[in-house]
Structure formats: C-alpha cells, structure tokens
Image (cartoon, rainbow, N blue to C red; front, side, top):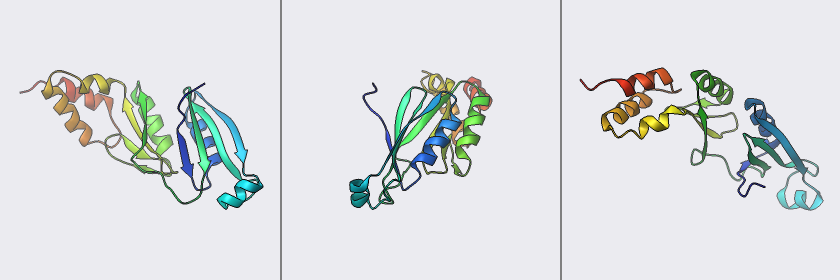
Length: 163
C-alpha cells in the first residue's frame, strides 16, 4: 500500500478529472468512486448520491480526486512533473494535458481543471547538474525562451562551445 496519496480538490469535477487523467497516461487505471450519503451531503452541501471521491492510479502512483466545493482551487504552488524520454513523448503529453487549459513557459502548463504540470525531458537533469557552469547557463537560457521544451534545442545549447 502506498503511504502518501495526493488528494486533488475539485468543485464538482472529480470523476471527470479522474477519467481525463486515466485517458492521458497509458499506464493508468480507474479506482473507486464514493458518493455522498445523507450525512455527508448535509455537511458538505453537495447533493446526496453525487460523487464525493474518485481514486485512480498513474504509473503506479495513487491519486484521489475530491469534490469539495468551490472553497479551494488548484494553483501552481503544486505541480506534477512528467519525465519524458523522447520529443514525441513531450509533444504528446504537452498537447493532451494542455487541451482546454493553458500552455505556459519553461515546460509548464495548466490542464483544463487548473492542475499544473511540468513536461520535461529526462536528459534535462544531467544537463542542469553538469559541473560546467557555462553549459548549465546556456541550457537555462534556452529553457527560458521556450514554452514546450525541445530536446534538440536543449542539446544544442548544452553542447555549444563557449566562443
């Protein structure tokens, strides 16, 4: 059993969000849906029988989506990082997750529910941890000029000699 499970607060879109995320990621599955009973509906103000929580799994990570009402909203203060091995993977996740949402800068996006994601290439970690400060600075400058990250452009910036 997973010790820590992120809980995502939605007004009334928990089930829709769960189904969306499961459709985006190949290695994912729908979990359980619970519904508000009489007592829960009375306290929450949600209709009896409406979805209270929906659990799902992405890449072995369990999540819970909660229909908690309009009191809280998602923000960039929490984001999920998707590590991609290829440009095709970056392109696919970028398009699917940003559909109906917002494409940000530096590999960040917000999906249609307001959840923030960072779509990054796995090679970026090695580039940014290089002992050569000139290389890491060039890579950072390249990132700052991009919305969706481009592996070829990052590799070019990383490999460019200081002249």
